[in-house]
Length: 304
Image (cartoon, rainbow, N blue to C red; front, side, top):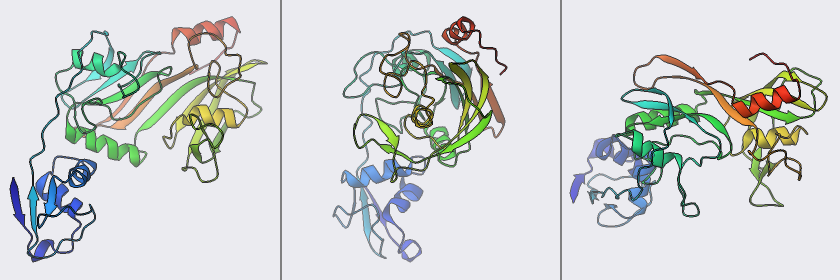
């Protein structure tokens, strides 16, 4: 147990801000708030809210947190590591692989593969999501950033919130377009008719997707999509909203699903400032083989 006496200099400061600055400077604000909510951090021996305003002569007591043991077995998935240094890695996730386990999903995930191939991963997001800064859907392939320590994780998370990480996707969708470029600005939230799905709803979160048509025929089109925001299923929802659902999408596409590989959506490019080295980095991976097969079958020419 550690004790901190509040002086006049720190009076009127929020408790979570004080904890983040003076007690756990290397941890995220979210971590500090959770420690307060759990009752591990008290003021005058009482559990208070995260936004409690400190007063002079308050006594903050802290019970040292215990790092929970990770009960996941490493699995050799031979992950495609595009880039790796001491701070982060960029992974090309294959289609069909879930990013991390959950209470409802106990099968092998990307995290199991990371534990096999990397010795250091951030733990800000808890024991079942080490290193995971952002996610893509199970049946979406492509690039993901992995944080190897908490400082890198926190900085990358802040960059995501500020839209400073440029994420570009390729998608094969139904129906040709009249325009070659456009933007979709439509709020996304939980569907009112089906709670499993997301949808464009009036009170949803701000969401913007920019797209460009790279090639098309009378029935399908290959589009490049850039996310300005990062809502759940954003590209899938937005393309369905404008009547161009992604081919193979079992949730937002036609009831009769094309193929057996899931939605034709691929995160093919990432660009961002390295949070530690302060170097601008750009990564891209080739279009997946199933995309090439589809485009060749329907003789859709395209230029990336």
